[in-house]
Amino acid sequence: MRKAEKEKLRKLLLEKKKAIIEEMSHTMKQSIQQTIRDSSGDISSYSYHMADQGTDAMERELSFMFASKSGRFLYHIEEALRRIDSKEFGKCDKCGKDINPERLEAVPHARLCINCKSAEEDAARGKK
Ligand SMILES: [Zn+2]
Image (tube, rainbow, N blue to C red; front, side, top):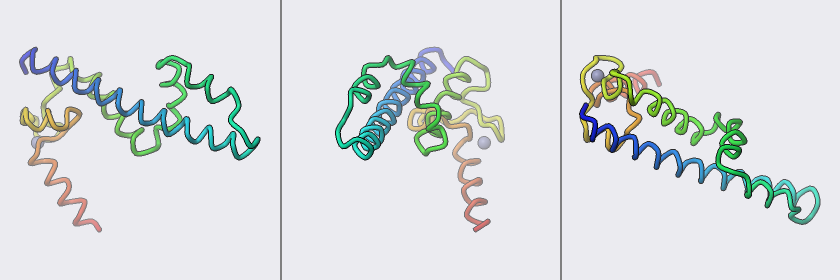
């Protein structure tokens, strides 16, 4: 994979990561405010304190949400960011062929080429 291509994908992954974290922290803030509202009848300074914390602290706070759907998505993005500098990045986990660049642009954290992915989906459907 060419360097420029890789950098483009890295940027895409970082953008996605940021969007998920923002979405998750928004969800979390809402649930905290809901909890506070439920317990005391008004919003204490606690929620504002949470909102003021840096992204790093926020990311740690969010680690418990990794079981959620966006949490799993975030995990895959982190994985892709870790793999992006390795030779395996952009290659299919199953057949070892290069993943179509257009597919990587749409799904930068993809680990399977489109053929293996649809084979996997067919198999999953068959199990039901
Ligand atoms: Zn494949």
